[in-house]
Length: 232
Ligand SMILES: [Zn+2]
Image (cartoon, rainbow, N blue to C red):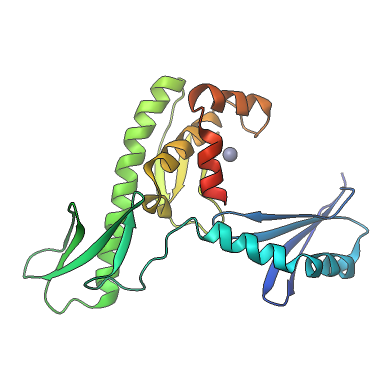
């Protein structure tokens, strides 16, 4: 078996993972949601050629990274009064309430109410809010998985919600576990639904081949639209 060599390079502000393997041409891909740059190159290409290749595409890479990263709405660094958060694709202004009761988060028509004990610092407020985001996503993902696993006749074991830099989600066929990126809670609910159907479809077909696409066409005809939204 021929070996695959990996390396990483940096050209100006752009860093990339390079894989040397049996391919004809140098290929460059930018992965959502983090905008990571992946290059595959023929084994004999040499770092110099890869570097020149990346250099010639820097503007293109930057433009696409901006596009991909724009899929996730900007988040304030810390929760305080008047900051704007996006939940399921809708914007809410944060109302910070300080009272001597256990911390809570409530979503109201116009705003998101974060209630903490007086004197609670920004890190703790952040942790409370992030936990609530994860719970929202987990609840919604569980409902959607119940619905779609029945429709698609597949068996899901566990759903994990976690922060992921390079993926929106993944599915482990062997154990039937699904992992979802926490940031999905900030996007339109259809994006999550598309992703759940996508990961469930992997229980029927592991790769993104034609069969996979026809499964998606059958169960979620608008999947290409939401894939574009997620991947810029
Ligand atoms: Zn996939």
